[in-house]
Length: 253
Image (cartoon, rainbow, N blue to C red; front, side, top):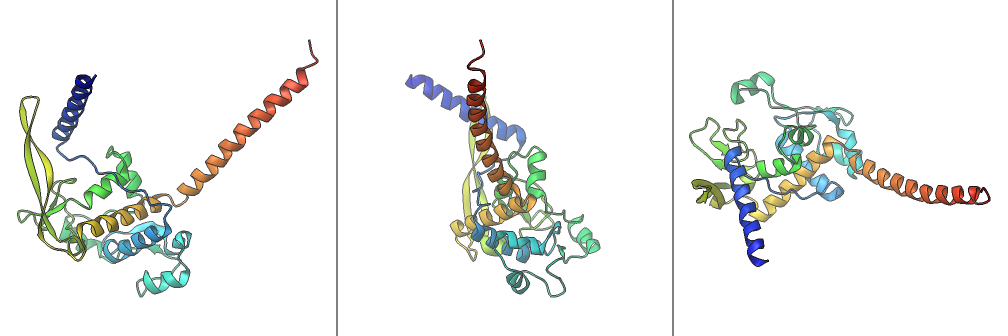
């Protein structure tokens, strides 16, 4: 039995290595699900407005919808709005589209549905992809923006959160898989420190990704809760209907 377990583990590891080699990327890390945590969502909204909304719009989300995560309109106005924006307006990027095209080669995409679109594009779980992507930037002087990304090789977007994370370099090791040597990510080497520790940065990214996941469908948790109650009601109704049916037909031969 022990030898069978060892064989299964070896086959699983080999399969994972082959999938990474064939896909030319890395395995996604599991993103913490904090879409029911209002404090995490509020922090994620703050990070999004301060660091993402400069270039990326969220054209299908209005600022006043943030009241759904526990913020008041006054808090939204005082902490999350630009000077010229109003609380009932949609989240529009401050960047000029022409300048964006000159700087990045294209206009940065809208992020309202990014957590869902990445999942639909075959990137596995959308939040898992985003969580991995935002934590795997590294300095690459051969690129125009000075940065590259393991989850999105040759990415055009620079690392806008580098001051929080600091500069890192990936560390690889060569592993044999099916008679061929492949490079597998072993870890990271911190080159320069950031304003946050590695744990604090991962925690902040988890909040940001949870906010992006929530923003893609603000009603998703309500829908799940209602669905659970509906299933419970249907289960009880089936029992009641079954007993009523038995009582109705008990004297019929």
